[in-house]
Length: 551
Image (cartoon, rainbow, N blue to C red; front, top):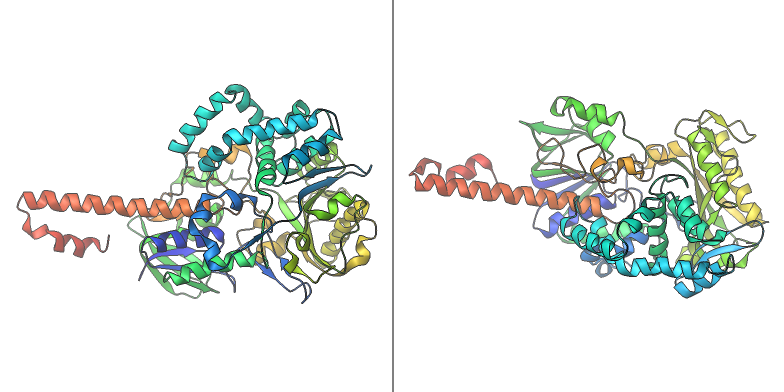
């Protein structure tokens, strides 16, 4: 019997397992797929000479995560690489907003859209200078972040207090209009806000767009050398070096609960895997509470809350092997790792509104990754390993385009939507399609089949909107990894602080398990001492350990 069972080997599950192993716990990780990694995996299935990431690729949150820093994955061989430019957002009229690693260079580019916008960018960077470290510390700790939050509140007051707080909760369209006269700065903020499911008019999208923009400005959008799977490989290698076990092809079908406490899991093949101290679930909240935990072990109110759980957008992704670089009309896009494709903030709003109405967008906003530009090991010299993804509705009511897409996502619909994605790239890079050697199409059902946490390709474990953050994540009144079942912890992106590859939900769950065990041990020791003072020799140390098991 191991001390802990971790369900799922995504980055959060592997981080949780490593934190427990560092504390001396024995850990087994059970993974449904044939390989570990969850949404952090790479392969050569598109073309044998090209490495493509199946899901996530760029990891700005990893760059500032104290959780990952503490694991020192460089000792496991993990190396990071960055493109010459962080991000580009070209427009059809030939202009291009560019996020550089040099803040002065970014500012100079924005002055080309409107004089004075460069100074506005520098002022936003100044806010990060004052607040960035405390924001990162608050973001990656359990809610409420008492110590880090206290420091952050003090700095917020010094930086403008309520006026600054107002800026951070603004919709990103409004924030961009208040800060910038030209479209360049507005595009950088709005495009980065849409790395989550935050439309330009959504409350709080301004703060998220600013956060992602500042991460790119100060840390770049790094990628693991050799593919996203290198990050998973480092986490798995570190865990195994500490005695942990990762078992793939093992789908967990039930969390076993006895007398209100999680005591292990049962797999789909009928195997029981007991856990002496804790079960940690790197699975979505609807999956954990809706299928893995017996309903009678959960309060009725939880099921009512789960009916209101909101997923983030569904996702449609295309991977390519290209025989040459993308032929961008604007050369500034050629050296950016990430490229955003939409012809202005108005088109971003139009696209988001179509999704909200249940329509497959006719001109999809694309986040496009040039992976060989970011990491030269991904494909032969002079070629490009690339991808683009867009979002679509979970429930398709109609097609805003002319293809009659219905959301069945059969082979014909997948190919027609992939053609629509390529046509959008062609608007900014004429001749793009002539460079395609091979492509792989991942529609919402494909993404979910490859990783059960990606419900219809929802990549953030639930919406990033304000109504499902902090004490509302995953349901009102939580915000922490503890669950209604003792010894069971939610360790996925459905828990605070949410999506992104940073490991915080996993680390928070592991630390909660460790705290609970310490508290139990302290209580047992206190009880033993009290009984001994009262002469209760029949309930001494040996008797207590025999009843309570290992603490």
